[in-house]
Image (cartoon, rainbow, N blue to C red; front, side, top):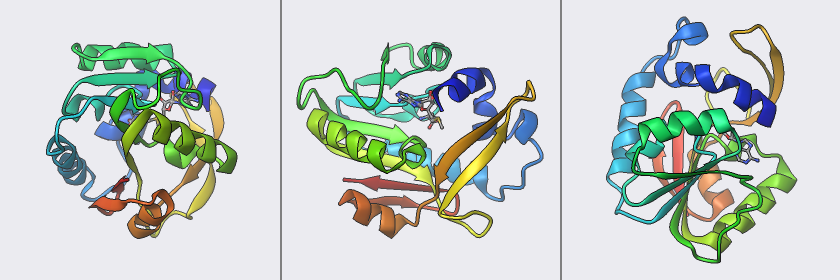
Length: 194
Ligand SMILES: C[S@@+](CC[C@H](N)C(=O)[O-])C[C@H]1O[C@@H](n2cnc3c(N)ncnc32)[C@H](O)[C@@H]1O
């Protein structure tokens, strides 16, 4: 997953924007829903926030409060720094957070949790609850064209092919899994606050 995302960084926002190789993907209501998700995040109370696996910073830029972004990919971080000039960004491993207990008020993560297999999921949740009192997970909603758990083949602009583990979530099930409440439930996106 790490090598794949480092390689994908320059074309990553095509997924959000529906451009490049994703220009022809049929995703009715995608942009409107992304805007609604963004507004939900902007309406959160300000908090000292760690955005784990922040990627290009596409959602990071909408998080209220003092922001630290973390990702393993140097190329992703370069793009995130440009989007969030006031943020602090660190290249590090999401599963071994080098922060003191309760160093943050909120830990945010988007489209990362659903890539974690069981053992890594347990490690991540334990680290998340150690460094912050609040957890917000944004991820992909389960819908008719996908299975709850998939090994997907992904193709990049350079033609390289990658196998990626990916889960899709029903909002209530994710809330139950995380011990939290549903913050956003759409056709494409879910968000849970725990
Ligand atoms: C699907 S992207 C999500 C990016 C961003 N959060 C978003 O919402 O667009 C997954 C991100 O996880 C990062 N990542 C994968 N494994 C990681 C790890 N072990 N530690 C830190 N970041 C990791 C990748 O580099 C990539 O930027």
